Amino acid sequence: MIDKKDYAYRVSAAGRVNLIGEHVDYCGGKVMPAALSLKNTVYVRPNGTDKINLSWTDIPARITLEIGKLGEYKDVKYANYPAGSAYFWQQAGHKVIGCDMLLDCTVPFGSGLSSSAAIEVSTIAALATVAGEAFDPVEVALVAQKAEHEYAGVNCGIMDQYASACGKKDNAILLDCKTLVREYVPILLGDYALVIANCNKPHSLVESKYNERRAEVELALGLLKTKADIACLAELTPDAFERIARVLDGHGKVRDRARHVVEECDRVRRAAGAMKRGDVGTLGELLNASHASLRDLYEVTGAELDTLAESAQAHPACAGSRMTGAGFGGCTVSIVHRDGVADFKRTVSEHYTRRIGYEPSFYDCSVEDGIIVTRL
Image 1: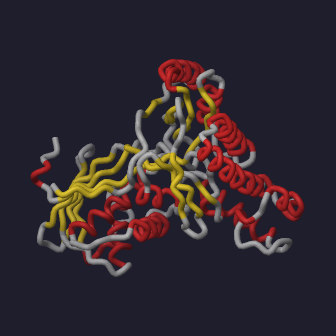
Image 2: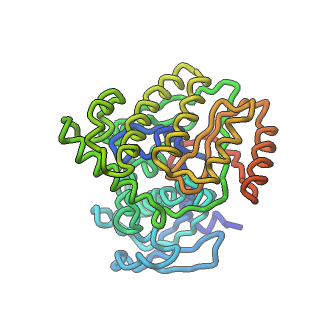
Image 3: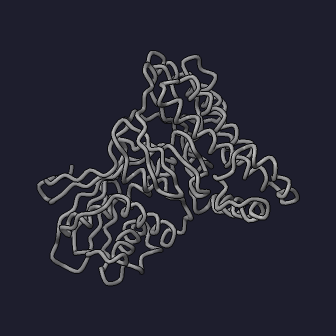
């Protein structure tokens, strides 16, 4: 049991679900994530030393970081995300003081709901708060992304950290990943609810083909630039892509990868319009099409996610379902009529378990603010 009186502040940052716009954030596209009530919470207090003492509510590890050596903990299990976040916040010119941090994470690890971003963002916000420094959530997100790139070794886009830091209750963020211009879009689902299901096959982005996919779309961009004046794949419409796509022939799956990005960006545009109109039917169809593209063109789903999505799509209460996150395991997000949620969970679970051999998990969570700071 956490004794709140022992700490000065409680600082949390959200996990996120991406409603649509997968594997386009690092291609300059728009995405539509929402911050969740699943979060990483840091209880923090100053300790008057030159050390950061880390502890966790769910693991027995106790790790001390020396503030003057924050760059040296990349290979320390459990500590690398907090240490990397502290290190790059320090490198950005911010004050880092000695403190005790207790981390409590309710974002399931390996779920594709961005536990790493929640840890990074909450760590930085806690460090700023305990040092008495105001912070800009966008800067926090950018520093957290840098930590993920250069400390954890995952070449991620900006979406996860941005959603974790800048989320808004009951809204999705229509985020342009090239310019960081955002628009909050109210989640108007009427009689429908979001249901998140975990296939329970954990993934690791470092060990997966994530970086391989990034290399493939970067190759595609270089080749397409010889035919079009573009800075990123997201600038191409589907029609424009078709006119010049033959330049990608002879490069294996590169054409399929680029086609997914271009068409997914178009789906995001249409999905934002559907959400603003409260058009759940169109939104659901776009989710289904997104999953098919991630399965067939980008090839980041696998038997578990495909089974979960197909089982969901077949249920009469479901308007649409897709994998969310980087893939290779993790979660689906489905739009389900509220009256059918209980039967949906039961039916999907039974079908999935028969096919895969173990049960999925379902999360009851709401869309909440990103960073929340509370003085204790």
